[in-house]
Image 1 (cartoon, rainbow, N blue to C red):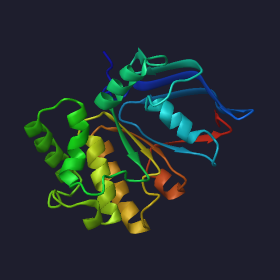
Image 2 (image 1 turned 90 degrees about the horizontal axis):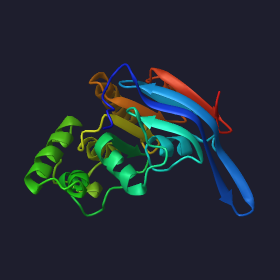
Image 3 (image 1 turned 60 degrees about the horizontal axis):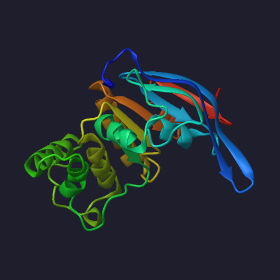
Image 4 (image 1 turned 180 degrees about the vertical axis):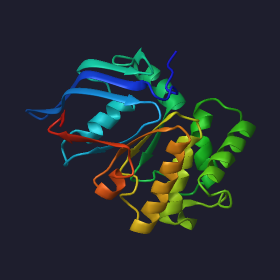
Length: 229
């Protein structure tokens, strides 16, 4: 049984994680032996130049990919070599994802957007609606339940995406350049929301190119050429 809620203990433990890809005749060594511990309740920023391995590391943490070698323990359980179905179950129960692109369905209301992950999890329709409304209220969109993406600002669309990530009640949020498509003021408001979620005990792991965004985190991890430096 995976437990990713224990604050103050390492919920993410990586040892000598490697990942390589073949691109034509070339082999790209995206991760070259990563050792990483992240405690429950931490707020961590991951930074590094393009091609440093940030996205590959996030995919590994989020159980979207598996390493070529090494061990990854999530909540104490080895998830390094699980099947894709098992990894999907872990993602649905423990991890919420927020991306730079909002990935919202164009003709679907905010409420229905946020209900989708619960439908995949087999939650009843009434409970889906209740929890989706609760998540939207949490991000300040309780009065925008029936609005489609084209009726929302960029910041509001990102808040819908965050509500969608929160609705399954994950203990870990993975955010990949969440402010990248937003203006400075809207980005600051979004970061305030992440601060509040972390203060409530949620583990936040964020990839960013922006030093001012990274300063919100408690710790910054620097990657270069597939290595933590």
